[in-house]
Length: 135
Image (cartoon, rainbow, N blue to C red; front, side):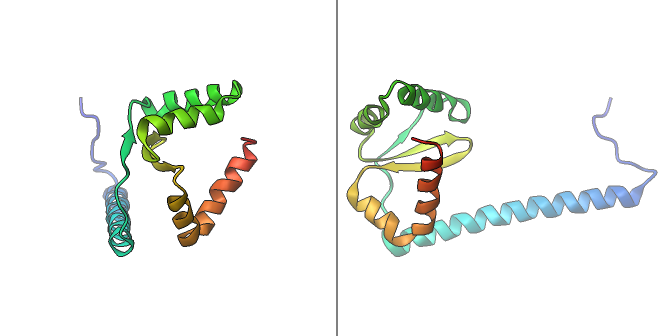
């Protein structure tokens, strides 16, 4: 039994589906390539160094990490949670797995100054999100 059969009765529809799917996949591949090239150029231009460590073992989509953060917040141990994590992983680390996102977490004053000086609008959006969550 075939999972997909080409609609022989409607060749125009099949061609349209093929062209649309090919266009979407090509655009996605190009946008990922362009994003990576832009990030690489930014790193070279500003002399960015890689993070000291990467947080792993956060579960599917970072669910274990998210649950640990919620538990720490509810127990009024939010600052202690991140203080312990920074003691284990260093002042700046990469958190992978937050619903497919990469998040750089830092408590280094120089990194925070650089973030505020280069892309303040991005930092501001994150701060507003934190305030809206009543953290």
